[in-house]
Length: 134
Length: 134
DNA sequence: GTTCCTGCAAAAGCTTTGCAGAAGA
DNA sequence: TCTTCTGCAAAGCTTTTGCAGGAAC
Image 1 (cartoon, rainbow over the protein chains, first blue to last red):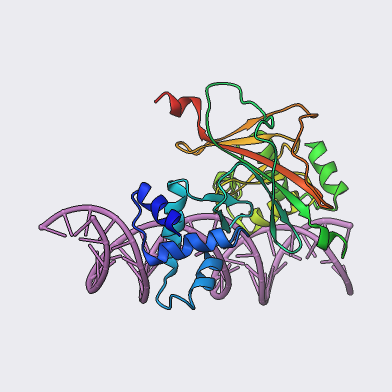
Image 2: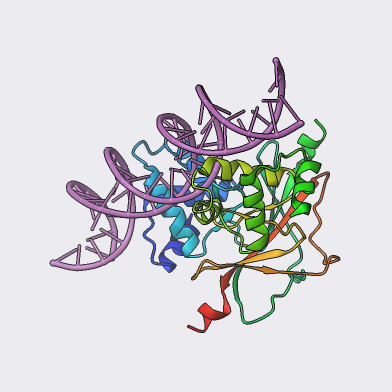
């Protein structure tokens, strides 16, 4: 909790109750939620919370590097407070998104020419164990 | 041209003029166009062409494996007639999408457990040589 | 006082769906 | 005939923007 406030201040983000709630939700639910999911989950506790605030908060978290923005399917942006390098797997049947990790020194393809790479994203699609066996 | 017709028939797709035009556009323009880009480009030649047809055609091409569906940014689906394994790089400044290739035997992270992987996507973001030097 | 933040309402952008007519098998 | 395909219009969803009031610094 303390840490969240400190991280916010470090990035010139005011630790408003709404922002704290969104960040806390991401930390407690590492399920790569969408903005809508977060909004729906937090609404009962923050009756006046608006989607606008959720969207803006998530964008801020992404800009400051406090969260990752994940795009696997069009039309749904997901967020992840785990900003370490890791991949994502989306089950095409149940829609759930799983993490998968790899060593820090894992070789990634190089690019020819003078490209400046800022983000690397890796995602797979397929069937999760549960859906596969059904 | 002949090949396109044959590929279509192989997958039970009728080679309508509209579909041929979309497929041909993808082959001639390996620039990962969006549905809108394709629609805009083809409209002059097919005055009655509708977005619906473009969207449906692209979906069909994806389902039959004749094209790849690429999602990097939310809100824009891109398509690529090159269905070989390769990565994509999107320049955050100019928006252009570049291909990058890697050896067929390039090691990709493994997943623990009984996941059935159907698609692997790799994309980078950053600055392209032109935008970097500007 | 000035800047940042919230949230309502509206707009925007991309994609999908319903449906009727046309074309092909 | 029966299935597939096209395309107009409308709807659907997610996300963004304009703006006014409020809070923090």
